[in-house]
Length: 320
Image (cartoon, rainbow, N blue to C red; front, side, top):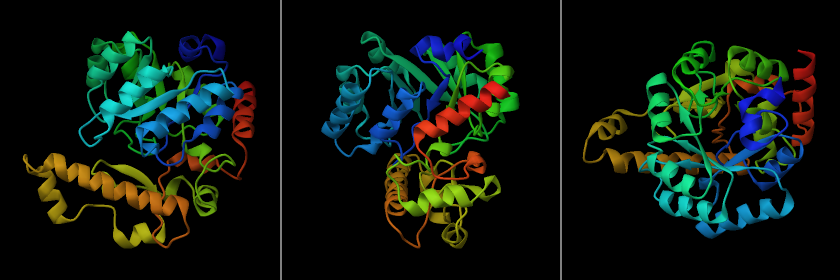
């Protein structure tokens, strides 16, 4: 069944899983181990502070494994490095892009000139049809159960809806933490899946021990949505600090976000401030714990290697 999944054909991989790009978490070690275990993965370009660091990371992965991997690009105006990131990824010939939070038109045009595939995050059928019309190679259905910037529709509704309107592959993202869950998505019509949160508590992840421990200790019911990090709703673990500070922007931030002249800059400021907050919590022990994760941490019971996680997913899939 997995060998027939469109994602396996698209990228020539054994098991139809993308290790989802996670801000601050995804790194070269995780991607290499994932590829060697038969899946693929992507890293957010924003995980690298400079363009040269991004280039160096891409080259490092290529020298240590021969499998496919991708780069996640934020394609809206909050990402001031977007054009440079796109350029260097095309020069270094990554295998695919995952586009988020904006129009992928420019990315698709440029990537295809270099033989690079483009998968676009979508949350509804209207946008899915739009990006297919722009030439996207696949859509990633960001469901309500997803971690990070989640959608508004459950996978039970979104996957069948997208399969009706799209002729390109539909990949499911959200709430998948087991091999049984992967099979459920494929049975529903998905052509592959994107999984992130279950890989946070791995040996290869560069985040703090406290962050990894939180993914083991907390469950799906502890995941809440906040607009404080990027202005766009984002899922985090409901730590005491999150409970104290709340999950909604204050009245001034909401007003500024609605101002046509100031909205662009306010979104960028909110994004940078929120990402700094995540960074401080991800790499150090601090009472200001704002850890991004999704409901699939429900299935994280211990800290293991990426290889061990993938092996269990495959065993669980086969026995489902």
